Length: 230
Ligand SMILES: [Zn+2]
Image (cartoon, rainbow, N blue to C red):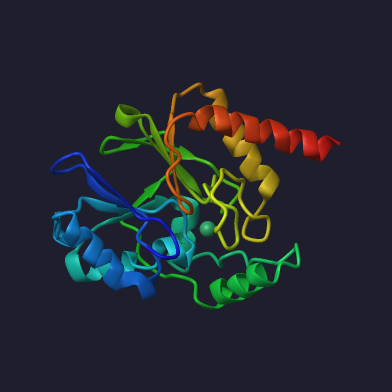
């Protein structure tokens, strides 16, 4: 996908998920990608959303209405997706012109979809553990796949520098898109403190980081603390 990553977990029937589903303008790319992997959308057990932003959740309504695929999201972001709670308007704090443009687009074209299963964190969905990591959005989720020691992080932890994501390296969320960067950092710290292992990072933006992802995450958090306290 051009804008945001979509990951497919194929753990067999009942454990076949897309994690995020891309912007609605990339619907054809999503369908072609599934086809290339040998799937029909009907084979999917569900759509797991890391958070409500339209470049991640944009095709959830289409997959649900067209193919009957249930949608899973954290309850806080489900309320936004269902229109019960207003999405917190994103504010461009850094003055970055690209971020300002993306923020204006997101504020105007928020995704709406019915969520079939609201998650809270602490449960499992198929072979994925669900961890609540608020900060980028109130309902941001991390999904950990213990079998492959992989962490799917959406925008709670990135693998490319936002907003243009041309430079590939592990990064914290962009403050312009986050409800609270410090809360996002606190959520990552709390997740690291659980001691749950992960070696690979599959983030919402940027190429997969294969190997050493946990050590990189801890180094990134430490350097953020040093910069903040300097
Ligand atoms: Zn986002």
